Image (cartoon, rainbow, N blue to C red; front, side, top):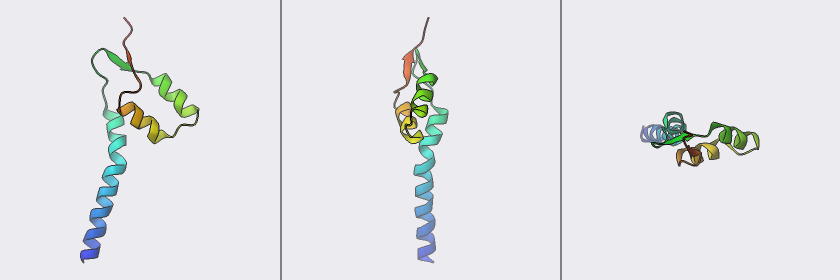
Length: 69
């Protein structure tokens, strides 16, 4: 029984870590005065960068550019 509960907890932690980046990427809003450069994201994905690395960079604000006036 302890093994079963331990496996469920381990699986739950793994799922949380796996989907946390996806959820943050999907729901992230850029800072005030900035917008997300979606063409840069698409270029990086097309050039062969992994999806998870692109998501991490976007979550850190790597694709935020000032809004055009």
